[in-house]
Image (cartoon, rainbow, N blue to C red; front, side, top):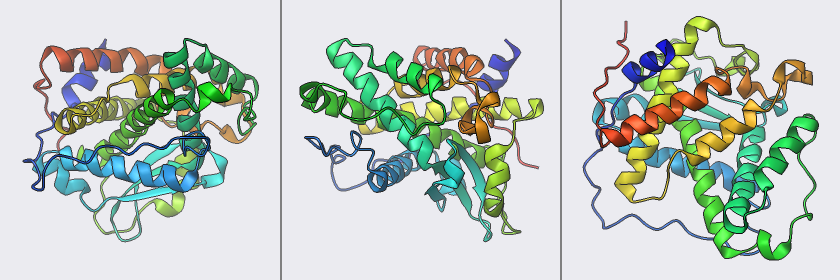
Length: 297
C-alpha cells in the first residue's frame, strides 16, 4: 500500500501542448503480408518506430517536462544481448533513453502473440511466455510454426502494431520520466552512457524503487494522454503483457542475466497491481489526478 501511495503522489499529470498546426495527425501506416516488420522483427524498423512513438510522447508533455527531454537521444542497440531499458546521460550531458535490441525483439514477439490470441482466440501469448521461461538462452521459438493465414491476417497485423506501440511507449515513457522527474540529472558534467554494462546489470536498491514506481505511473500517464491527444487506440494492455512476461522469468539463475530488465526494475509482480491501480485512478479522475513532482535539488 505504501508503494502505491508513493507512486500516486509522484506521478506527474501531463498538460498537453496546444494542437500543432497542419491538420489532424497522420494515421499509422499498415504493412501487410509475411514481410510485416513486427512478424519478422525487422530491427531497423523497430528502432524507427520506437523513435516515432517517443517523439509523440514528448510532444504530449507539458512545457516544463517537455523542456527536460526535448533533446533526448534514443540509444537502441544490442548491449551484450541483454533485454533492458534505462535512462542515462551521454558524455555531452544530453539525456539518453536506451532500449536494447533484445527487449525490442521480446516486445515484437509479445505483440504478435497477443494479437493472434485476441483475433483468433488461441493461447499464443501463454505459449510464447512458457517457451521463453523454459528456453531462457534461446533467441526465440522458430518461425514457421504459425498458420500463415492467421499470421498474416490484416486484423492481426493491425492489432499487433497497436500492442507494440503501447508496450514500447510505456517503456520509453518510463525512462523519459526518470529525466523529467529529476531521478537522472544531465548537466554537461559527463554522462553515464559509457557505463551501460553496469547500468544494464545493476540490481535496483530498495531506496530507488519508489523512483521506479513513480516512473511507471508517469509513463502510463504520458501514454494515455498521448492516446487521447492523437485519438490512438492505446491503453495499458501492452505494458501489462510485457510485465506478465517478466513475471514468469527467473533472471537470477540465467547466465549473464539475459532478462536484465527484470533485475534493474522492481519485480513485475509488484508493478502489475500498481500499474492497474494507476490506470483505474486516471480514468476515474478523467486524466487529471492531483499529483506533485519530486523536487530537484
